[in-house]
Length: 118
Image (cartoon, rainbow, N blue to C red; front, side):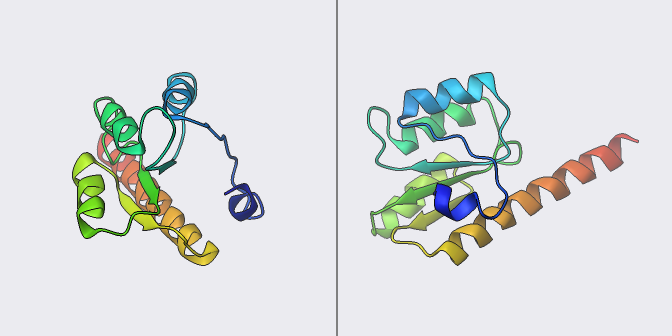
């Protein structure tokens, strides 16, 4: 992931498990999260469920990365609150495009909120 996003100018923070991810979100503001569905301890779905109690999909986009291929898994991730779902192995181009799309939608939503508050 670092090799994909650092050259694109993204600032990254890597959490090695679900608890570390939740702790990081408690202490910092993030524009987007990439979660692995198979993290040690808490699964990516469990982390997403926990985060969705605090942040809507418009406030904190979440993209789930997984090696699972069943359509039911993708549906479960989306129904849990993930903004997008990417199967491994993914290409650099696809993942960057999906992240950029989520960030563009986040930026547009923020601009609309600002505009409506004026």
